[in-house]
Image 1 (cartoon, rainbow, N blue to C red):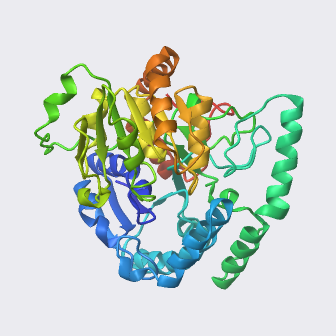
Image 2 (spheres, rainbow, N blue to C red; image 1 turned 45 degrees about the vertical axis):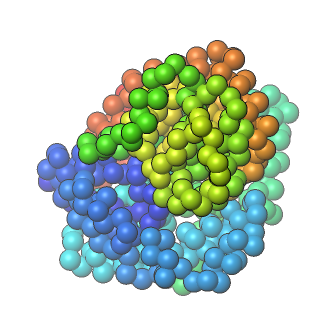
Image 3 (tube, one colour; image 1 turned 180 degrees about the horizontal axis):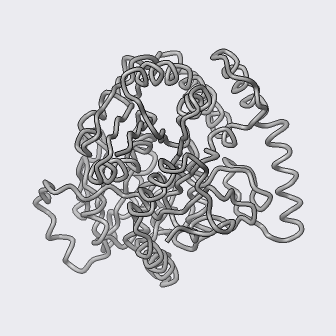
Length: 441
């Protein structure tokens, strides 16, 4: 038996990929303790893991722990500036209290291996303090610097020409030395405050475990990298199992009427319904299509759609694993887990996301040929309608999505992830691929 200590940012997108891993670890006889938000206790304990809530610092599942000034500063920024705010004050600052809480936990729980999401820096700092091996899992596109790609966050697709290499070199230099320099300075300053030495590393270099990194997708969704670190393993999407207690809504039979089914979701973080939900419903109101919308927990009445179009069905939440097999096109702001679940079901997408790291995911959807990137947070109904019709009329999008589905089916993601973690536990050494960029199947 191995004792695993998991730490995740207290948000669904950070927690969900680890749910099937934790469940599989428990089923194989390992002991798992999971540190995350208080509001995620039920999800965590359903895996068989023991839940420990955040004691210090911000818990995104408890609004009362989020200072009003923090929210005001976040909302004052847009684009890259907002992305930098999240890195500095959402993730780096949080590592201080994470380290304090985790240090307390280790006094009672003698962990063998540490596991965290890529944005949870406190776990890497705990490893530095204790010498324990740590692994990280990706819950977004690969963020690490490469000579073959532009810097993460800009949403630029790869260019393997000589001019493209020059572009990458120039942009990577600019990002490191100018654009993101203040993030690196902030990271070193906070490291010093907890007794760690400065390293001059950018955020994502610091977040890359030297032992093991699990990337929850397949190689075809990621840009080719000739310098991919050898501890990075593609596992295939880490998708939680379908809930067994799902009761279909009364309109469920409408999915079988032969009309194209369009699913629109706003996700769990950027949940302003007027950004995507409302314009999609309006865009398709007069079309011979069935529009399914989920509000991510928000009140349906808050949409202020009166009357509701006859071809629209709205729910607070529907498990993707139940709905997506019936869907022809998904309209999304490109949360990573939702995109991977769509691809696992062979569903092409219309993406519209420009907050957090979503420009990178949108760019990969476009690059992989599995969807259309509208390159905005707030598309017009006309833009959405045109994109949906283009996908329905162009077989290539569905074909590419189905091709991705077949690739995903070659990956037994849980077996891959757990075997790699068990190998780390057994050897306490980096778990490396046989060749740079190879996959684990």
